[in-house]
Length: 263
Image 1: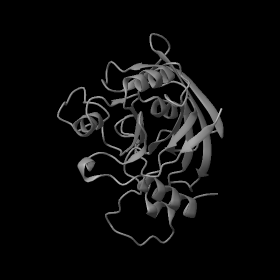
Image 2: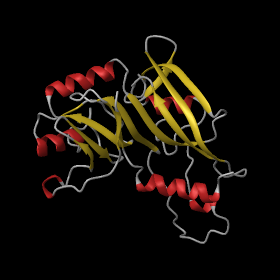
Image 3: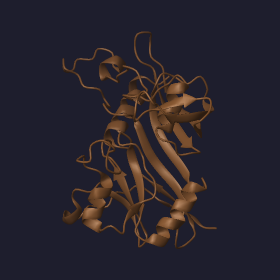
Image 4: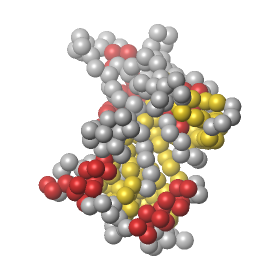
């Protein structure tokens, strides 16, 4: 069976849809957006006035377009939508049967003990903290993620060590990757729910740093990016991979880590 890749080349947005995120793939049945960190996919549970992707999509493209999956508001990257009901049904079936290949990238606060590992936990919403998830022994939902360390950035004592990690979730639970990495002892950098106070500053990496007194982190939001989806196309029935380019802040953080901290 043919296999092809729709790489994350962002097409210029038309003036009429300037409020939408960049489109990284589109055909007669699919459209994929490169969602920025901070944008909700759907209306917020508690504050319906917050801007969200699907309201923007429906305003610009009509209500015939529907999202086939979700990523966290704080996560950047690929969001796939269907433009027809048959495409929605076909793609939703793939997500439900766990045949979609999902690929994320993260920066972790701390170094994982192994280069490849799998986290398998039962998760449920935390009754004491609505909107957050917790690990339980029963009465939850199974969740599995495979992880591969792409690069390690160890630092001297007193400075934060980080890692660049590839994440391949087998299931699709809320906050799954975030909870799994936190449970492994290496939470995602800048995770306000499951992380710590670690910040990535250039002054911590570069000797003799002579920058601003009010230095800002190299990446100041959740360091998690939805990088790719591998699906079967609803019309051609061919396997295809759609990819979303790393955001500028993620690339900048990696550039300085590679330059000053890699061993």
